[in-house]
Image 1 (cartoon, rainbow, N blue to C red):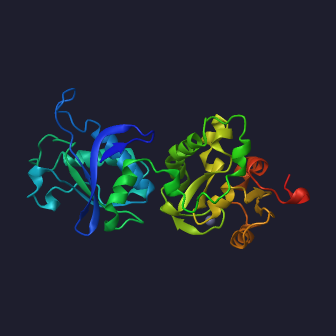
Image 2 (cartoon, rainbow, N blue to C red):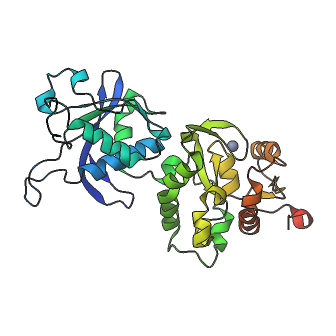
Length: 318
Ligand SMILES: [Zn+2]
C-alpha cells in the first residue's frame, strides 16, 4: 500500500499492515535503488514513515516493539535487531518527527560491529502496534485508514443523511474561504491533528469540555468554537481558546449543530423542540460551567450569533 499525504497526493513510500503473532504490525518497506533511475524505490521513505506515525498518534496507538525486518536479518534474533525507543505511546510524544528520526537512526546500529560508523537508516522495518479500536482482524481496515488522511464520514460516527444540514452552512460568514462544503471539511480535517495535539498537551485522556467525562484521545474531537473560516489569523493561532475538546458521544455534534452554546460562563441549550433523547442530553449540559470561559467568551459570542438555534425570542442570550 502507498502512503497518501493529507492533500491526497501519493508519497513514494510503501507499507503494509500485517498480523505478527497476536499483534498488528506496520511494515515499512526499504528505500533502494539509485535516485533518478528506474531502480529507485520508496525515495520518500522518511516522509512516508513520519505521516504513518502521525496518523497512528491520532489514533492513540502505541508502538509496543520494533525491529529491522530485512531479508538479511530474518535469522537474527529479534532482540539483536530491535529499534529504539520502544515502547512508544505515540499520543504522549510531542515531536513525532523526532521519534521517526530516532527509530530510523537506531536501524543504522543493527548488525554493525561496535564502534562502526552508522549504517543504513532506511531499511525494511516492522513495528508492533496496539491501536485502540483495531484487533488483528482489522489489519485491512487499519492499512486503509493509515494510507489516507481520515475522511470526515469515518471519524464522525452518527452523522448520516437523515440529519439536518448545520444551519450555519446556510449563512456562512463573508470570510468563508472554500468553494464547497467538501473543501470546508477537508480544511477542518487537515488542522485537526495540530489542534488536538495543542489541546491535549501530551495527555492520552482528557475531559470533554461540555459534559466533563474523561475520555481517551480517540473519543474526543477538537471542536472550533468560532469556525476557522471566520477567524482572523491571530484567532486561528489562539488554539487554546478558539477550540475545545468535545466528545464524540454527542457533545461535539450538539455544539456543532447549534443545539447548545455558551453565555456568561455557562452552557445554554436551545429550547427548540427536539427528540426526547436529545432533549435529555441537553438538559444534562444546560447550565454547566464552561472551562476557560474568560479566554473563550468572544468565540462563544460568535457561536451564539452564527450557529446557535436560539432559545425563544426573549431568552436568547445577547
Ligand atoms: Zn461530552
